[in-house]
Length: 486
Ligand SMILES: *Cc1c(COP(=O)(O)O)cnc(C)c1O
Image (cartoon, rainbow, N blue to C red; front, side):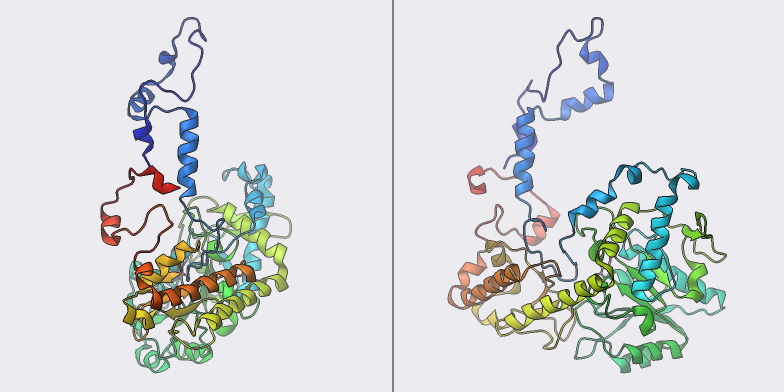
């Protein structure tokens, strides 16, 4: 497909105005110099050219509106479109962050109530809706931990992070001035308690834990873990990116976590991965509430106000109300589902993942042969003898019309080999999941009988195999053979 610049024809225009529109002024006089300069570098194409070019481009993409997107760890689920509409209603969109509080009581009320709802869902006492992403929520969380210990005159400078953790965990620790110490997983894929006991000392601020963890396994020893950390005076941080596999069933606040963050994108009805805004509210137990970043919304029985400059607060992380439309979607989604609906979401996510796991584990050897939460990890290890790698399976899946799962994660020992992490989410029907399973089983047969088919896959996509390294370092964004696109 050609670049839009290559379609340029000298003198061709998107639209034209009558030359005699104004009596004394020529059109050229109305165009500012900077725009005239830009015009020289823009391609000269008609409206039809532009529409067709970009429509064609958009069809080369694969998104959640096209089909299953089982990218483990990322929670690429379908979200109700009505929540998108709600979030752009005029009254919300036109509310100015400098408006007098009296005129935006409705907006403040929603933020206030969302805080309450998230507390109810997670068993925490107060949320700040300020952070713009999961990583930002973590950063707020570890700043809170650091300030808390500084106030107590404790110089704890280490933080424990499991080897299975999302990369943002150690990064957040480092940004807050902690030394991140890796905690090895046990054979089951969860926290190694002996290691935890050994590492958790008076110089350690605590443990950052994801539960279910990033390989989709629920750590049922959470109570013992909590005791080990708290006995040494540490704090327990909950990375809530996998909350979609536990809300309505178990609350992190009830299992001893002191601080949490939630990814409203991923879990609460904002599409994840579209490059749009997200939100990563950070929630704490009462004894840490005065550390929360401002602004918070308070209510005195009559009026909602933006305040929250709590005496110890870690300061401002963002301007104004932060990503308000994301909050709106979460609020609408929670209210429309209710308590039972939320539980149904996590139960369905768990059932869907275990269904995929049960159907595929005889074809792809599991990394952990045990009941999983909302995502499962299988491997293509047994196809090595045919020269097949996980990458080949993933590429072949595209020929069957599916987005491939996350591959080569987890990559820590002892389960490092040829992994695929599949997260079907709650929003897929049994028919769709069955089609995916059927494709995966077909591919496992092809791996044995016709491995070349896999090695050269995908066969049906506009772009076939790229040199992975070169593609990232020196991208070539067009190719000439238009016919291949059909
Ligand atoms: C996605 C994710 C994060 C980071 O969240 P972002 O919103 O992408 O910054 C942190 N931890 C886990 C477990 C995640 O899956």
